[in-house]
Image (cartoon, rainbow, N blue to C red; front, side, top):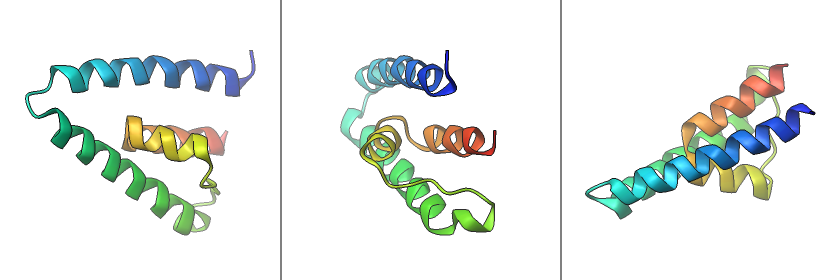
Length: 84
């Protein structure tokens, strides 16, 4: 298996876990918006200033969707995989 396939499988499992997490929350919309906004902000910061740490994460549909669903941990995993 290629690392991209493994990453996609892990993202699918994490997305399912996040959907279950958001369903069980008392304030569903508020926690979902907070996670999406922080994830998008982290992705934009890494895209804009990633050259300072030696990484280049593009703003693709996959990255934007992943950061809005999974939040900051998705962006951290992208950066770690980019260093490999």
